[in-house]
Length: 270
Image (cartoon, rainbow, N blue to C red; front, side, top):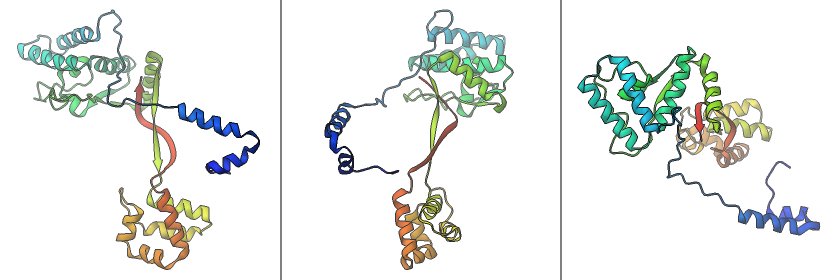
């Protein structure tokens, strides 16, 4: 019985203990989870010297600037101060420190890592060793990475060598504790759902393959779109009871999650 039974069917199964169904409904009525998705729930970095994340980030950035440039000019100091003011005023110091922390671990263990995209435009990131592209030399904009006028989480894209990726994930787990990889769901797309339903209904492999291939190949293709754009599929749907049954069931299941897997790179630190 691999299906969800109706309330009536469930009560028929528990005719001798009807209170079990009543109590189940009572418990379900008391269960309520409200997720506050509008608020930011970022983890906090605890500096080893007991200072605040903001103080620690500033010290690291200044130390890194001396290592990168030797002499800190007024241009470098002014830009570094401006970036730090924006980062710290928005409460993102811990975020930068966490990224710095696992990048530091990577460097210490000879694991190639490096930021890419708009994150390369931040002098703070350059001084922290997140990347090796000098944003001042190449006139890269910090505002392209983090707009002072918008209150959005920064996104430092870090490329990590595949050979050392597992080590970094293990380090993050051991250090921060409440860590999980992100789940992903593979959904039933137009072609795949036709093959699945044909298999369940006992339709021949040849016919299932023929119907599936009538669906035009496109990432956003749906069965409704396919029926409108592909005359042969529409003709088969209108003239064959078997095809109509298959397609009608497929349209009800299309888009549902088919399987779960682990995101290739996403890690959540709570």
